[in-house]
Amino acid sequence: METLVPKFFLLFLFVYLFGYFIIFRKWSPKIRPEASSCFISIFHGTPATLLAAAAILSAADRGFAAENTKFQSLVLDFSVAYFAADLLHLAVFFAGAGDLPFVIHHLATLFVLLTCRHAASRGAVAVLALLALAEVTSALQNTWALARVRRSNCSSSTHVATACDA
Image (cartoon, rainbow, N blue to C red; front, top):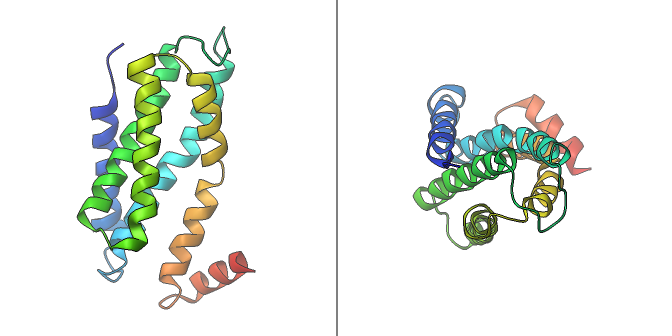
């Protein structure tokens, strides 16, 4: 099966740029990159959770070493593209040691996803189960992160961030 990573990468790049230049255009240039990164994470997390669950449930063989199905490979490609796009963001706007854990996390995740998708072509059930569990709270975490970076300029963001901090 051909890889869809380049197409999905362009999708995430478009979403990032749309967030940066349209959605967050009035936000401070200092926080727009982080906001745009959260925006693409929202576009990845919830769909990835639902797609991963569907790909696991639709597979005839759900063994951990089962050969990847086309649907599972599509979900892996979707996630590889997201992590690559967010790594590009981190490369452009690297803020020093504070971003290092995210860079390491993204590189390790890409290694696992790419190994499962291209090197082994097996194991997607286990990897997608972990992906679904890891991304299930993504929308909430990214909404909280957006509220935290915006709280000094927006009273409703302060309420969201404060409620989430409690």
